[in-house]
Image (cartoon, rainbow, N blue to C red; front, side):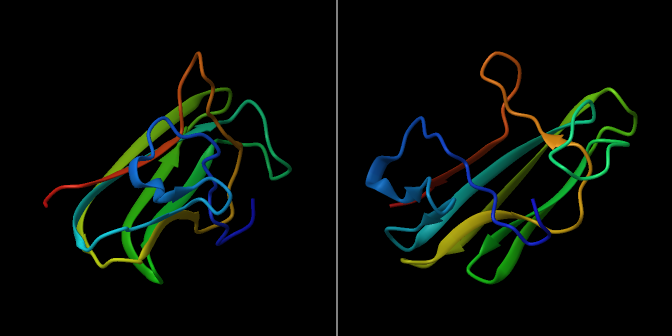
Length: 129
């Protein structure tokens, strides 16, 4: 994964209104309103996706269009370990605005997301009518 890459979450559990695209990794707000967004990012320092292997470390940004609305740092602090961090943002989002998670600096280790262990996730929902 390169610096600035959009993180694509390839599975959905619920996608009412079809606002989330697994091909782009972006949620497009179907209506203007106040939304809640959460993203949990997990890293593993036991393996790598081609980068250095010292610790599991990633920085992510939650984006609304081209604006940063949240920042998260996940770091194992040791080798042969895994760690997760969670961010939460409540924000007014205009209809048609894309919200997504992207990597924002060089990383170490690999994203950890396993069905039977732990998951890296991105979720959002509209809070008002």
